Structures are given as structure tokens and as C-alpha cells.
Image (cartoon, rainbow, N blue to C red; front, side, top):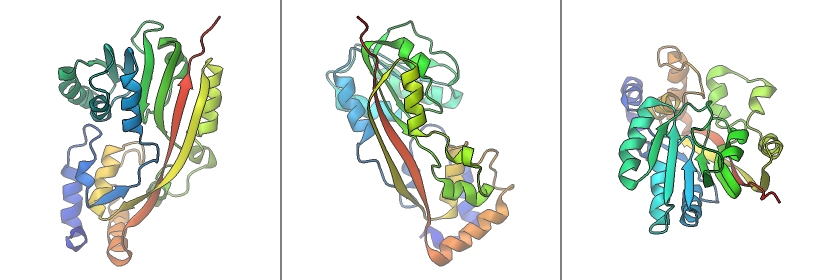
Length: 262
């Protein structure tokens, strides 16, 4: 078992694993996260099956869209595109999705979407850094849908605050779903569904923590093993004595429609 291995071995392994893409299979047996009850990737596949033109925003390595497309076949959209801003993920998504007929476009997450007004009847996104509601509204056709799973407030903050200490109230309340609802409505969109859940996570060895913080870089900005070695050693001892480190992720599901103007 990993808890019987030395601190040095576990940390070295966690620091060596590639971080590209959103494939979390390396964590099997080392960390767990409960999944939201709505099953986003499966539901996205059902939406794709009824769409003519679809866009996946901030696709990561393309793994979630690839899975959803498998659920949509053979009734997949005629036009299908994806955006991604991080160069290693652009390359990974292109290799995975281009053979499936998806146009992968390199686009910074904070830049306007590189598509004409009213291009898509479905826009998807899983865990966008920030939803750009005006741009989503612009590229949607009237009657089109934005269907996305967002990260919610104070997600995995047990781990964040273990390393960074207590966070200000404003930081803890960022990504509030009701605030995002108001922003979507201000962009002229109609929120027809919004669900939120908090979900248990367990980190079963310190190597899993190291890899997680290297992969999800906004959790502990500037994280390195060297900078946080003392806290990592304490965490290794905690897991060995008491069992997994427990945290909770926060997720919410948006089902948003662009009204048809008469």
C-alpha cells in the first residue's frame, strides 16, 4: 500500500507524473472524489445527440467531450468545435478529437470566443475557469442552450487552507452559483435549471496530494514540493496515523437558454 512507502518515494512519484489533460485515472486507489448525481458527461452526450452545431469551451485535453461524443453517436452534431488555452492541452485535445471530426481551436480562456454570432445551438463546458456569459450569449443561436458543470465556492478548501491558512470571506464565496445566475441573466440568458452539490474527497497518500496540486494549479498558486515540504511531511504523518485526508469539492450544473426574440 502507498502509506507504507517512504515520504520521499511518494513525493517523487507525485512530482513526476505528467499533468496534461483531464484524465484522472492515475489517482485510482490513491484518491477518490464522489461524482455529482446528475452525471455531466453522460448528460452532455444526450444534449449532443440533439444538436446541429456544438462548442465545448475550455475542453482541457478533450477527454470529457470524447466520452460525451461516444454517448451521442451516431446522432452527433454536423459542426463540432472545442476551445482550449493551455498549449499542452491544445496538443492533447487535438490528437484526441481531430480524428473524431472536432475542430480544436487554441484560444485563451479570457479572450473573446473566435466564432461568429449565433454559430451554435449548444455550448458545453466542464469546469471553466470563469464563464464569459456575454460571449456565450453571443455565439448561441436564439433558442440555443448552454449546458455546463462549474466548480463552486470553497471547493477543496480543506486542502487549500491546510497549505495557505484561512482564506478571506471573498475568496471563499467566489464562484457562487447564485451570483453566476445573476451574471447569466444580465447577459440576456434564461437559467432554466441550476443544481449544486458538495462531494466528499479522500487523499490516501501524500503523492496524490502533490500530483493534484500540480495538476489543479489554481488551488495553491506557485505550489512546489520544496516550498511546502514541511507541511507535506506533516500531511504524510497525518495520513499514516489517521487515514485519508478528507476534503469536499463543490459543483453546480447550469442549464441555460438563449431566449427567442420576437
